[in-house]
Image (tube, rainbow, N blue to C red; front, top):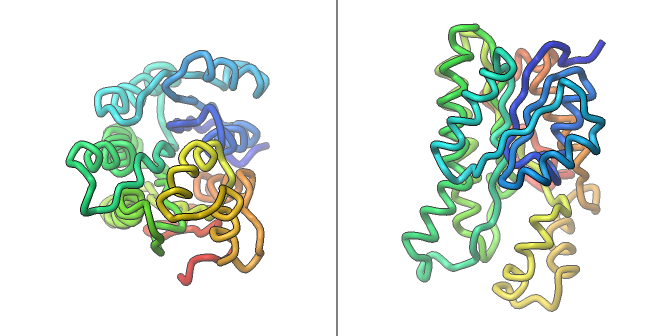
Length: 260
């Protein structure tokens, strides 16, 4: 028996990287998993690579769009009959403009892609979780939800805010069988790192991506990057009955980088 037998989970941005790792871990523990992302071809390929079957589904969703995030939740319930676990995993570094140079449009996109998609998905899922008196909400923050660095002010502000949102939701629904927590991964060399890293390297005046990676994991106790599997293991804990007493907090999977 798996830790998530009979549960239905929906994860944004889950066709690759950390989201894909969480989807695979949930599926391996017996959950029915709805993957989502902008590209249907990539989503269907991910399902095929995960072995297919009637416990894997894909729903296209641009997580920076409110209507699509809400439709993802509704479609999950329509397809699977319920929703037990959500992981608003979409997010990342949209730009590296300093605060003094950031436009309203850049700031708004950063909000929509990180904090707002977490809020939209949580609010919609509670519509179903509250009547069933059970649910797991796992917001995806970061070690930069607790510390700071140069060149990514929008990302840092949003990841701090996701922690606050999860704490607030936990207080609201704690007596109704629903938990809300934030996961804080450290440096995991995902696709996002290779896609957005060059702009950060330039903004920080570094010679290359290796130098940026060295800075990011030099602050850890383990002196290496974390892995997607390590983040996924923490997500399984929070999603399962083992995590029933864990709510309103953060789980760091950052190799000891965060001071708290």
